[in-house]
Image (cartoon, rainbow over all chains, first blue to last red; front, side):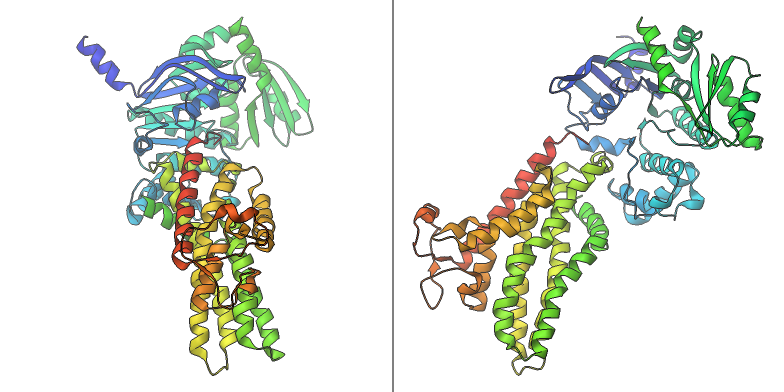
Length: 315
Length: 270
């Protein structure tokens, strides 16, 4: 083995070999193999593709039915000590609601064996990193969904882990919070950490990851750079839903954007935009929100079109 | 790591609404005592019979139902268990830490209730020392009973879909029904053992707990209980000895905690 190969193997933090997982008669994952190293890797797939099950297997919450998962050289299901070096941001939107943000993150940091003062200091640093310093003493039950997402992110990085798993981390965030969170993920990747982020929204994964693993029907369909996968689906339009108090005004403005091929209105405050360039639309909406020239309450890529994209990729 | 997890759970559980509500429930018998004292009821039988039965036959089992069942069940339901399972402590250490926390919280509520009852019953009587000792004994038996029930209901919380309901049916159905059955049927109830301890330690009449023993003083079983005599209707029931009662309670608790660890290690639906 060459020296080059050796150093490349050393960088691999997650290795999955022939992983299958079934629940009774339902097969969730079929013969999945992958290797993940430093940087940000996106796990992309439509709802029901098996992303959550794969996440559970990678994080030891599920035991594989067959095959093997190695996380930092350990079996995550049988060796919980590996979690000293791993942080997980689950897709659960439940907390110990009566706790305050700082208290919650400190509490979980203490389960890593930290004494109270260093745990509190680490929690303050993590909350600062996700931009929640001002509201860290607020009760979790009273926080917005975007804030709660960031608290989850903070608890995942409080112990400075080498590997971070983020399951649908941008759900419910406003455009500015999305931008800040993507920047943080990028920074973690540049620090040499392994960041695995799952999403069913292609544009999100595009913004977050250098490498994408495409999962469909419990199988790895494609693996590679975002550009390579995006090129394959460039011609397919994406439908983006925007919740805004002025859907008609905003609809009129987005029609002038490159790639937009049509708009539709739904249930009063919802604007549906069909575009072949969702990246441009997302950037434009973020700029509008930042400059306060338009109010956008929610921005999401609807599943139906992504399903179509996957259908096209599957053939 | 068990100690850290235990202290973290304890702080959260002890300050919870559940503990506050259950402590109020445990204080309700005090109201009965106050009313009875106002109407000149004799404090000694009230404490020895009515209150001890109320605590050992009902509250010592009822309080752990809620504490122990909620230890894991709610976190699995809300999926907040994920935050614990993706940390370095082992699943076994979580089970032990949760058990200890549920036990301490249950004991806390029960001890406050028993102390208040002891205070009301002993207030103004010439033999306050006797009531202090009786209170201590009842308190000790309640704490031991809470330990066994916590271990048992921890298993309920991990194994069953409606653990609170089944726990309540078990507490008020099985545990009390079996005390009325003839022969050695009561050996099959968890509650027999802390009650037997109290009967021995406080030297009270076992008929207060509906145990039909054939003696003016309790008939004490020195060897292991003959469980096969359950079917022998009309056979003489013998109370288990202090050491047997303690042994059964400790053994049952260890067994249940072991079962809870096994169940928790097999759970995947987080």
